[in-house]
Image 1: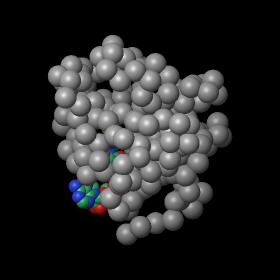
Image 2: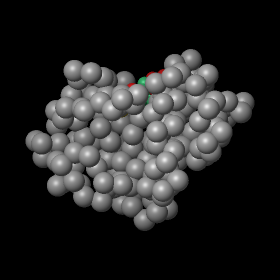
Image 3: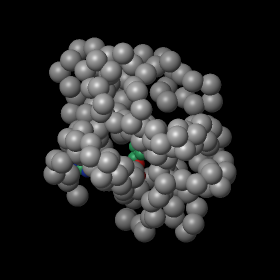
Image 4: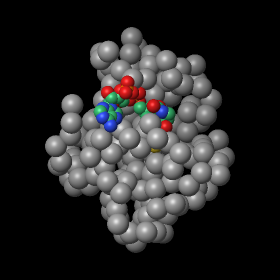
Length: 174
Ligand SMILES: CC(C)(COP(=O)(O)OP(=O)(O)OC[C@H]1O[C@@H](n2cnc3c(N)ncnc32)[C@H](O)[C@@H]1OP(=O)(O)O)[C@@H](O)C(=O)NCCC(=O)NCCS
C-alpha cells in the first residue's frame, strides 16, 4: 500500500524525534550528519507520516572516505544510511526517499550518484538494482571493508560492501 509521506531536509528539532521513531543507532547517525548539512556538505532527508519521522537518508557531496571511490568516482555524490522504520516498510517510503534524494542531486547539477550496499543485504541490493543502480566494473569497488564510526554503524560488522552507481537521468521504474 502506498502512503502519503512528506519528505524534507531535517531541522535539528526533527532529529530528536528520531530517537523515539527509529531508535538510538539511527538517531546517532543522523544527529552526527547535521553539522555536515549545516556546513553545506550534504543533506539529511527525513520522511514524515502523520508528522512523525518514519525514515531517513543522508546525501553527501563531500570527499569520499574510501581511496578507491575517490580514484574511480571522484566528485560523485553519495547516498548513506537509507533507513525506513521496520513497521513502515514495503509501502514505498524507501523509494520515495531515494526519488527525492536523486531529484535534489540533479537540481545541484550532478549527473551520477553512488552508494555502498552490504554483501548480505539482499533486500536493499535488489531494490537498488531494480531502480537502475549498477555495479561498476572496477574490482576495487567491490568487497570493501567498513571502518565503523562510533555510534554510527554504516555497515554490519564483519560484512563487506560493494559500490553501486546510477545515472541521475535514467528512467526509473514505478
Ligand atoms: C531497504 C529499505 C530502506 C527499503 O525501504 P521500503 O520502504 O521497504 O522500500 P519500498 O517499499 O520503497 O520499496 C520496496 C518495494 O520496491 C519494489 N521492488 C523492489 N525490488 C523490486 C524488484 N526487483 N522488482 C519489482 N519490484 C521491486 C517492490 O514493490 C518492493 O515492495 P516489497 O518490499 O513489498 O516487495 C528498508 O528495507 C530498510 O530500511 N532496511 C534496513 C536498512 C537498510 O538495509 N538500508 C539500506 C542500506 S544500503
